[in-house]
Image (tube, rainbow over all chains, first blue to last red):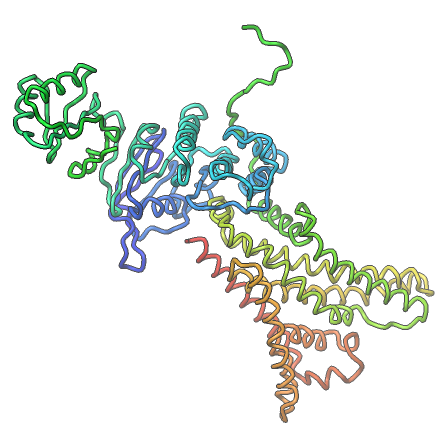
Length: 304
Length: 293
């Protein structure tokens, strides 16, 4: 079954600002990364998927249901984690998640049990009885994730789940999302403006920009089999390219940067050897971590 | 590796297969949650102080009235007059309770968590409104019940006396219900406009406070028609006008009702209905906008 399908989906605000433009995409269950810069239309898409915004044109289906005509049925099976602060500071996490579980239609006891289960799964134990106001950002993000899980949805919509977290917190959150998508058997749509983050955990990638679809597909098909090394020399780029080509390395040019697929550790030695032989000033030699980035924006290579 | 018995195993994520309740039960759960919030139940001790102080005062007044009545045999205040006399306390109570119900949620940004769930956005506003109306009605109706019990036990006419007293109580409870509905709809609408609880509370009091002088001015203008319609200008006097129209002698000495509202009784009833309807419509519109953000 198709998890999410849109057809020529368009959303304009007041007839002038275009948030989504003729977006047609279909994704299968799994972990889906939705990437795009801030303002690309990610949050608008999520609100349409939840039936909170009506599209200006086109069609949309979530879990085989139409959120424009039957939003309650969609929302019953979807969990949503918003981007911004959404937690009343004076309630404890357990109280809040229990209450929101009841709002999803769980009976009182079931809501309480599932709330503590959900909080345990996201890694909150005894602290769940303390007021949320005293929590760290990481803990708050976990509570937001727990409330999206409490009613056992079939699909989670996560809007920038790593927002405001430090690097370790980001890794934890991504690992948690990955676990939900694989072990829990719940499909996840993760929104992020950081491609490098979501490409680590998702199986499908959807990239949008300015409300338009840039690219969508399984991540395995998008990333080449090998990683890429980026080489930059201050001068003599041409001769280095020729030399590397002579060494049977499939080198490609990208502005002043040479891109060489990383077959194994020997590739490093070959490149360094070539640079040393030609006596060129090596400016940069690094492994591209944002592999997929080049697929979306080949003119603006990103360096870490 | 052998594991000792009695260890709690991590059984992993469990899918939920139990029942999922429908819209009515969810609405009921939200209503009950709101009602508990109003009285500070399930919240900090600080949140309980004000509601229970007000409850203490109104109950004390009711008990005092009952005691005086049983000693002297004189009815100092009818049930409806009691509701009128307590109106300022009810206003303050509503001014504190309404922001607790809606402004807090606006400020903390929790609303997207509600609106991403099956319950329709109108249900959120209506459940909160019903909770506030119920709370205000309990605040007035509870002490009225105390007065009734006191009178019923002290009556010297047996069951007939109890029955007569009951027929006095029921209109009083309905009148208290009118107070509750009008104050709840005006108060909740004002509070839903801001996420700052202090502003919301001030706004609610201001609506009632600022409109009272208008009534005063209108009622001394040299036109009898304007005088008789003056009570329409403020929500609290509007309620009193409806009371004068429907309850008559329970509200004021004979003839006084005629003096104050003349033949405009139905206008007052219509005014009250329109006011509540307008407030509810605006409240629903307001949450339509909030939900789409």
